[in-house]
Length: 265
Image 1 (spheres, rainbow, N blue to C red):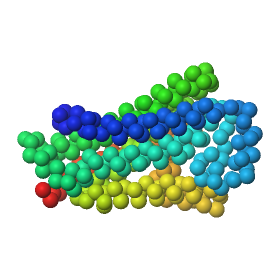
Image 2: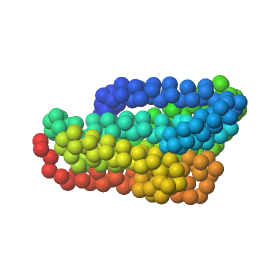
Image 3: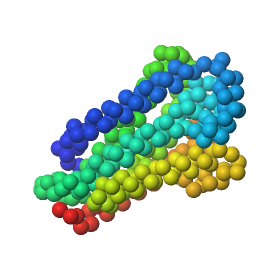
Image 4: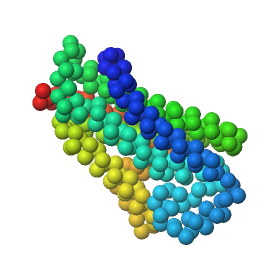
């Protein structure tokens, strides 16, 4: 990769990273602080009063343990939707915006191959997401230990986060692909947003009731099986592997497409 460009992307995008890290920190700490096994019956009554809404957000059964509570309230939608917004914005900035504003000509003017430049953007995209993942995991582990020492099942928690990063990789690869295909940021961000909204919306609808359960197969979000990963189920690991493979395929395809296309420089 081009180390100079890699460092430049960190300098250019660190504020965006910090903003989303701060927002996720607030939500993570709030959810952990809300945990109280004695509130289980009250929360169940609330869920029973609005079953469709709670089910749509993956909170129909928050469980009795800290892990079940966190996975229900955080990993159902918050750690999916908010990072997806970050991924859309970041992917758009890494490629499409450079083309749209004419800056790509300066990047390609250096004596480096085009593939090396785009691979650097891919590496930054993945490492940026990995840094965000490690940070959030650390926040949850530390704050859970402070608030409820010994309550969190760490091994199962880490398994869930391996799956979560696979989900982020999948979304990241697809959004990066759109950014590499289009010259206009409106098309790149529009297609990325359409994919994310569709995938999350279908997932939410599929959780509302048995009548809509089968449409879960129409969204790749179904591959992220929180409960299955927590339990270490084989099928959940297969879904996790598929998410990583989808992400890698789209990242690799984006590099190949960008390297071969004509750019309006």
